[in-house]
Length: 372
Image (spheres, rainbow, N blue to C red):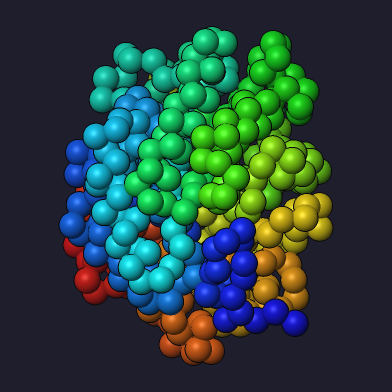
């Protein structure tokens, strides 16, 4: 029976345990480059016991950012800063990958008149609906992911994670709720998945066979008209065939339809509803794990006593990712590995962290060092 503290081998990389630092935007970047505070943030978490660090969302293009203070990997001039970040984590003996993202219809725009790009003109933020991408624009984004991946491995990262979840661009193409196309990029599940799969293939070619390629995808979407669990299982198999080494199974916890000047927009969140028991995504991640032959990460309020260890022991997932628990308590991973679950400073689910990163550095009502 596997234990949370057991190492796991991924290609030539040995993860010292089954806990993963989930990709969490910190708002600490400066001019889309790692700041000294950001280097310390990742160094401290690597030192505190996680077995794998997935560095926060990093944009593949200047018009792809999902938060104003986001890391970037769209220019060779950004490689030295990324190299400092990779080195800071690896110095603690922990493998590190960086998540690559394109915001699509959820990308930041200082000028609302500048159109966002997406699968179809379906708004996923308050504001003007995005514009449907052309074939040439789709191909350009695939190339941008590949180029960013090359920069990441040149900077010393052990691999990359392709972000195909949370209703950012690739997810917008995957979901029938936001993809209304009738060309080869829309319609059937196979067509809707084409963008994500072609991106993964391009990234795999860019980084080579020896580096890690992860993909963050949905194990479940609580979205009316979104992906079904059966579609998610099919996608997991297709991503494995495309060259993914490790699936990072997240989900959409809540969704609603908002209104902006008479125009509806789809509002989604990866955060499970406040007050619900931890581990709500686990049964869906377990379904993916049964569908594929590669390891699966699960996430979702798993620092509650006994949850993370139980997931691994039962074989529901191979690894457990921690997000907000690591913001509330930097030492949460160490405490879980040592069986001191009850000592973890629990996240209050106030979402101060989510609110803060839109304007500046991450804040937390639990972590004294991060209080405003």
